[in-house]
Image 1 (cartoon, rainbow, N blue to C red):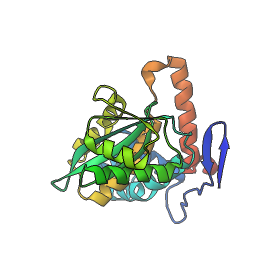
Image 2: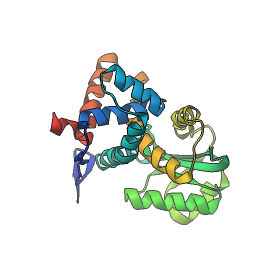
Image 3: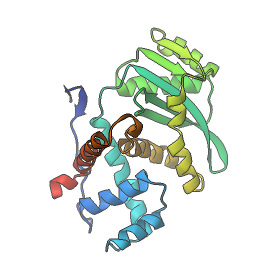
Length: 246
């Protein structure tokens, strides 16, 4: 079920289950937040938790991130605002186990990530698959589609969403290109990615969680920034279930 209220799309939400876990939701949620928000390794998260009197192994942190990261990201996705009417799309190559893969990304004009997908190619067929995945998940179409001059986008645009205005320019698509920077930071911190499935799962969660805590700071005052971050941390406690367990 989907309920639209105040511009937000809210689906029925399933809170993560912490049954059988020794640590409470607040601790697990904090560990997952540290790993996805900052370019940290599992061992570094282990050390930060130890400084706060929480003794866990880095393998436990890895298990928490693998289990709860995607769950938190799904809850954030269910609470997403309706996407804007201008979508920016871009692709960038990444190395996965020494092989070149392409990370496709769609971003709205306010910088929020709509979706990402890792594929082995960046031809017209790959672009069409990504377009169809977006339309299926979002159940809406944009007013304007902004891409660079890669011809694959033109092929996909003509076949998948021909009614949408398509603007193709390397100067108009900085919004999508800049959104790749956090991924590059994580790629360096993780010393490259190991498998396509693992990188898809990680980046899908990372794109949701990291973006939540990256408001456009340069566009708002200090007081508005603090208020915005307070609200975002409140939302984080809700999606992780920490608020219910407080």
